Structures are given as structure tokens and as C-alpha cells.
Length: 189
Image 1 (tube, rainbow, N blue to C red):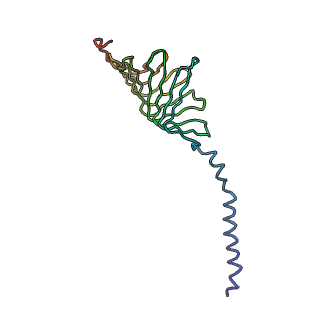
Image 2 (cartoon, rainbow, N blue to C red; image 1 turned 90 degrees about the horizontal axis):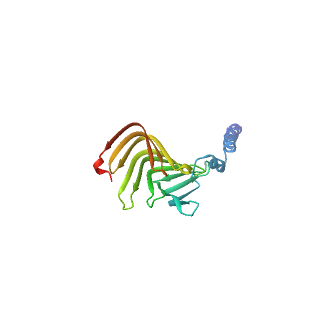
Image 3 (spheres, rainbow, N blue to C red; image 1 turned 180 degrees about the vertical axis):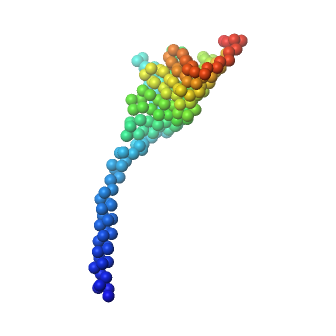
């Protein structure tokens, strides 16, 4: 009786084995999948990058709690980035956010989540604060912009706006729409 079922069992084993072999042959190798995925190839903790001007003086510093590089796009993602933009005076404009993204050519930094911008005077007093979110910083132009709500505070008042453009080198802000300002001339330095 066993001899009668032997060819059927053998045929069934051949079918199952062929199916398994076909599946293994059609799967892509793991190395090719890694190149197509958006996975970091390296990371740095407590990352610091300093860009110098033509005279060898720091022009900009980019710091982050963690930086990850992605080879498929040659971009970087940042955790808790902190940007310092050095101008003509001794105190830099500083920008912090929750997360960040840096373009492949490093000309664009997108600061994501809550963004805090500030400048102190020579004596360490806050002369400007900006609270906003999702700010795009264009390094080559010392220019930044957002379409989000922004709160701007100075010693003499505060302004609220939807949308903001900032020229860092010229210390100029442009408030885009729905602007509301409170000004106290007694507090003007």
C-alpha cells in the first residue's frame, strides 16, 4: 500500500521544493535593497561644523545633538540643531529648533518644529527674540523665511505675524500678513 502512494508523495515534495526554490531566486539580494532605502550610513553625536569667511573668521556654526547622513540623497538630518550666524558685531544671531534637514550642497537648512531665534547685545541683554516654526535658512544669502505664525519681541514691544522673511546680515525683518504690533516708546533704548 505504501508503494502505491510513494510516487504521489515524491511529486508533492518536488512541487513544494520547486516553489520554495523559485521564491528564493526571485527575492532581491539584501545589498541592493539597502541602496534603495533611506537609511543613514553614518551618524555623529554632539556634531559641530564651523564655516569660515575669506579672512578665516567663523561666519557660521552649525551644532546638533545628533547628525545623520543619508547616502541616497546626500542629505543630513539633525536633532536639536543650533545655528550661530556671526555678523559684524561681537554677538551672533542664534537659531534653535527641534529638528533640522540640510541639503546635499549645504546651502539650505530647514529647521523643523518650534524655532527660537535670538540676539543679545554686547552686555548680554536680549535685544531680539523670534518664536516661530518650520523656518528655511538659505546659507549663501544669509536669508530665512517661514509661512508660519511668528512672534517678534524687542525691548520696546512685540509683533505678531503670519509669515516672516529675515535678512540676517542686514538685521532686517519683513512681516508678511495679519501683523499686530504693540510698541512702548518708554522702553526704547
